[in-house]
Amino acid sequence: MIPRHWLAIGAAVLLAAALAWSFKAGHDSGYASASGRYERMMTEQADANRRAVNAANQDLLRAADALDAKSQELDDVLKSIDQAADADPDGGAIGLAADSVRRLNAIR
Image (cartoon, rainbow, N blue to C red; front, side, top):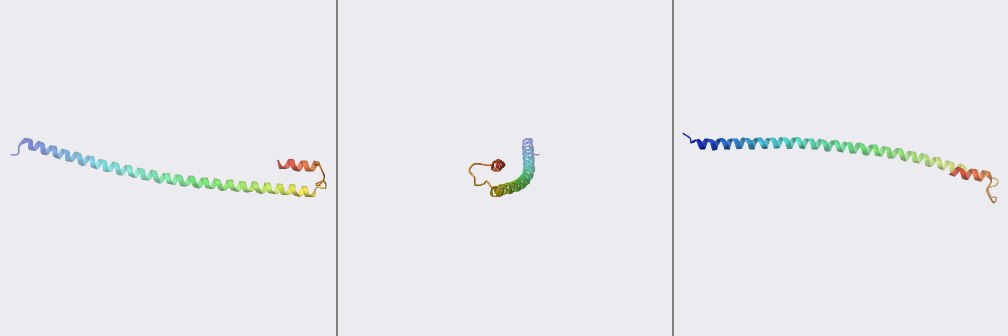
């Protein structure tokens, strides 16, 4: 017959082994779950960053087009003012005629 204290020691060893296995299985499962969540979060963040950069690039292109159109409009206005100044019969006179003042005011 096996002494009682050996049975108690055996049961304690089995219990400790079961607890250790349970802890390790829980740890591994938790790590795998956290790792999966982290990878999904990183993928979602990378996608969000990519979308934000694309949207910013589109906004930049629209702003550049608007600036280009405004620049072209300004060039057209300046050309028409230059043409009007060249056609002014009083263009070479000392002082400013009313037409010259209006052209200067159009630049503002």
